[in-house]
Amino acid sequence: MTSALEQSQHGHVFRPGRLRRQRAYWLDGAVLHWRIGSREGHVALTDIASLRLNLPATPRLAASCVLVEKTGRVHKLSDIYWPRWTREERPYWGRLQRREATFRALTFTLARRLNKANPDAILETGPGRAEWLATCVVALLAAAIVIVGIALMVVHGRFEPAAAAFMAVAAIYLPVLWPVIRSGGPKPLHPDTLHNANPPPDWVDW
Image 1: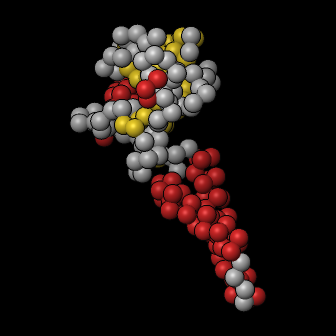
Image 2 (image 1 turned 180 degrees about the vertical axis):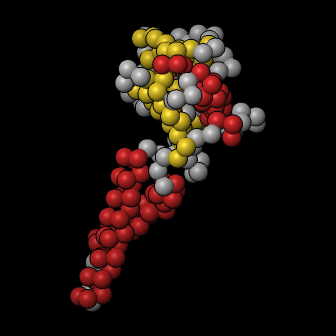
């Protein structure tokens, strides 16, 4: 059951996977509260070491926010919500929802407050370094599959339907990976560029 605080102006409830527990984060002044299933906790903004906010240019890709406490605890927030098999959510079960409005309301405000509460905190935007490098490797492999496959068919003068289908799948992934590659990895985040006004509509089904 979600509380009124979780549904407040700076509260965000999400469920990143069909088999994952419901999660909630909400701000109360300079303290960030969280709930994962039945477990609850909180952390002062002065005890958060870094924040990385990723808002993909492609609308169908999930937005995410990664927080790291000074103790090493990691919090991963997302704008994805998979409805549960409950009386209230059963009509929406199996339909992915995007809770962008509450995600932005929480993370944008969190970034601004964190910057004031802990000026030494690292604020970044974009995909993580490991994610960016992995995406580049996958893109290079996909491009190599297409180029080598075409070259082999030209050299042997023979068209292979199975190989062509595999090359087509590899080629389809390249446009999807390009926005992540183009971002260049994490960049410094300036909280004053984040604006909560006119957020995208909430409860979007895909």
